[in-house]
Each structure stands twice: as C-alpha cells, then as structure tokens.
Length: 357
Ligand SMILES: *Cc1c(COP(=O)(O)O)cnc(C)c1O
Image (cartoon, rainbow, N blue to C red):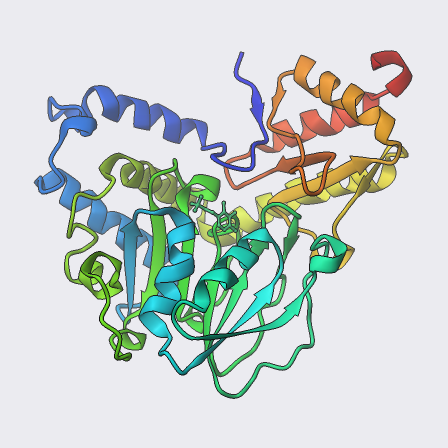
C-alpha cells in the first residue's frame, strides 16, 4: 500500500507525475532510449528544457525580461550566488531572519559585502514573521524566505520596497498566485514543491545582472547559464524533466488560482482540527500560519510517542517535527491530495492517548 507522504522534502509528487517519470526511465516518449541515457544536447532534451522555462514564466505571468534557470548546488548555493552576483563590496544587503534557512543565507553575505538583518523572530523559535521594520534606503536588495519549512510560517503579504526584492521560495513556489514581477530574483530547491532533488529553479530579472565589479567564477555567474539555457555544463536532465511534468500538471489543474483554492482547503481542514482537538496545539502565530508546512505538538508531551506510533501504524509517513520545534509537522504541498489530509485529520479525531500508549 502506498503511504500518505507528509515529508518536508524531498516530498510528495503528483501520482500522475511519478507514473510518467517512471515511463521516461524505460523509454522516453518512444524514442527507444531511457531519458537517463540521453544527451543533454539532444533535440528532445533541449525542447523540454525550453518548455519548462516557458511554463514557469506563463504560470507566474512573467515576460522575457526574466530568465528561468535550472541549476545545481541546491537552494543552499543560492545563499552565496545571490550576493556574489548582486552585491558590491561596499554595498549593503538587507535580510529578514525568519528561520534556519534565512540564517544560513545571511551567513554567506559577508563574504561579498555588508549585511543588515532588519528583524528576527529567532528568540521565539521563529514562530512568527516579523513586520513593520524599516528597510534602509541604501539597501541593494531585500532578501526574504517566503515560507519557513521548519517552523511553518509563511508571508501572506510581501514587503513593499524600492530595493530589489529577492526570495527563497523553496517550499511554497507555485502554491498560489502572487505578483512575481515585484521580485528581482526568486529561487527554489526543486525537492519541496516541484520535483526531485537535484535541481534548483532560479528566476531572475536580467537587467539586474552584470552591474558589479567583482570577477565571478564562470559556473557561479548567472549570465553564463542564461547564455547557454542552463546547459553550459551537463544539467541534471532527469530532475528537470520531472519538474516539467509537475509544471504541466500545475497548468492542467487550472493554474495557480486553482492550486491555491485546493491548498487553502487542505490547510483549513488541518488547522481547524488542530484548534478543535484538545490533545493538540499549533506552534506558529495564527496570522502567519503556513499553508504548506503545518507544525503541531501534543499539549501533553507524554502523548507524542503514542500519536507517532498511531500515525506509523496507519501508513502515515514523514510527520515527525523538526528537532528544533519537536512534535509533528505535516507538509501538505501542492501534490498532497485532500483525501490524505482528511485521513490524518480522522486519525487525530480518533486519537485516544490511553488506548494507543
Ligand atoms: C530545504 C530548503 C532549503 C535548502 O535547500 P537545498 O536544496 O537542500 O540546498 C533552503 N531554503 C528553504 C526554505 C528550504 O525549505
């Protein structure tokens, strides 16, 4: 039996995508080759890479002033590629510290220029998104983490700024419509909400590049990859193909507006149960609750092992909370069916600690 996969990442993919991806491993579109053994210079691969780029732009409503790249090195490599490509030695970048991933991004900046951390929710284990901070006039860019995978907080309004706006959207990209044209650069590791591990989506407004003095290693220069359509070196062909399948699936769902409605329905169902059920409580501030990652704990810590066992016995996978938060975290990304959320909610309703323990 297939388990209900609530893992934070690598994470659930649509069942139809998995099936098509499996087919491509044995025989890619009846070419007579496995996609795993096909050249990245082949017509087939070049064609689907272009389709993937176009679909990203059309789903987000972006024009040709943006480039779409599929890179390697994870979202973690974007933590340094962003300042390396955009921040001059004497310039200042502004960051908001909303979690462990933001903190890791912040750590890289001083290799290239100055960093100012405008606000942080670290003292309360990152259980809210800071608001109302001043964005310094001289900031070259403002970096945010749109969804905090570990703590289950998410921006529901993005900050207004004249500085270039940059976001790590690893765990909520394509989960709802937003004005992507407000962003100068967006990046996302594929393995949360888009595809398998192995590629990182970067969406960048081309006019912001090539403006600083620094000499940038070829592979770390966004312009290298723009010129070569993400194929300067051998790209991760198969992960990119699986991302394309997900992008097609997103479009077939009716685009991001339709996806948003489904995501909201799933999140509402789960949060309603967390708030109703006397055994559980949520850990994130109500107004900043994420629609993608839903952390919760047992009011009585002694019940947690029993609920974990109950989940495991019923085919629920990946709900253990991150060690820094404890308890549980149900990741309910785009691909998560409503029925699986319903199933988890049923378990929560039926949970009787004294019977299971
Ligand atoms: C998982 C995650 C990362 C790290 O991604 P890698 O691809 O493993 O480097 C960065 N940011 C956020 C928000 C994440 O959820």
